[in-house]
Image (tube, rainbow, N blue to C red; front, top):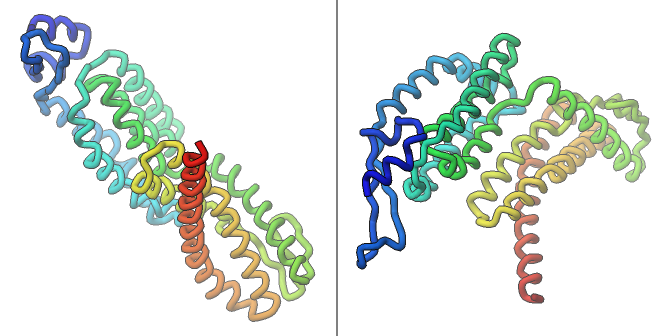
Length: 317
């Protein structure tokens, strides 16, 4: 029995098998097992060594990432991600414990790719490549030392970690500028519907009282990134089906864009009929928090609608 277990793992990395792990096979009462439950005792010393090496490689990158969470309001939601990722590991502890360990040299492909990406990021001074290389490298280590099945168990954790990494500047600008133009266009149309004379020039809404510029900070990217992250977390806690979670996360995009348009529309009304200074100061800041709460409420309504629609579909079937 032990010879079979050893021979089946002879092509795998030795970290989790030889001398550091043992397989305990539970057989059925008749002596010929119909099902096998594998439990592994792992020597954690190689994992601790790898953790130390990761800290040495990435500690400066991690400090800069935390600083960006603090310094860039568009990505302040990053502080939530490590705690949520830790909770995911704790919540999936039973599935992780029951997943058989099957080390594989195939995982080295991801390890090499992650190290290559880190090298490119360091040489090219690209923070996005440096940061994402950490996730790729850890995923490769999991595949190499623990097996592809374990990597499958942790794939959602790796996806969540990606949400903590700010987008590269070139991608960020490709998203924010179209959002600025679209928000300006929709807000201008809404102001015309209520009788406010408006002349739109790009991302500038010219009102009789004063011009109102839809700046990058008002593009809606901040609420979009935050609401998308909240939708992912919300879906994980309150839904068990993947398609509902995906639909909830996808619905956060039009909700955030619409909420930002409403905010700009309200600011334009306040500029025209109230006090421009107060409209661009207190109201603009306060309305941001209010619209985010409204967006959360809309996300909840979408969730209720999904359940109602799915319930009717099941009844009709």
